[in-house]
Image 1 (cartoon, rainbow, N blue to C red):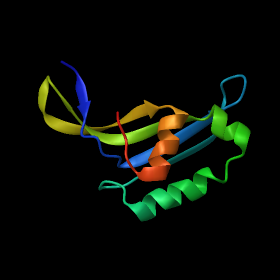
Image 2: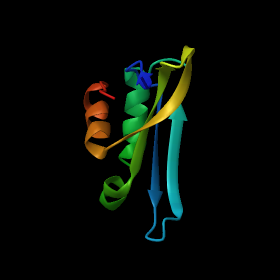
Image 3: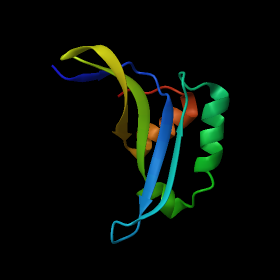
Length: 97
């Protein structure tokens, strides 16, 4: 029982907080369909604008289509991912949630 992703990414986000946990920078972009190579390249361009400290302290998320064992419908949801998974997504567009 639980919530299951369809394994596709429909958007990404990151949030960067200061030492007092105040949000200082965020980015969010979603698409109506699975992200394509051009969209991933756009995300990578925006990500590369972050400095090293921001990249290492950011909290990342993937927007994905989900289903639940409790309902027959689907819904969109954000899944948190670590920096390594986010970097791998930028390299090859593949995820494992």
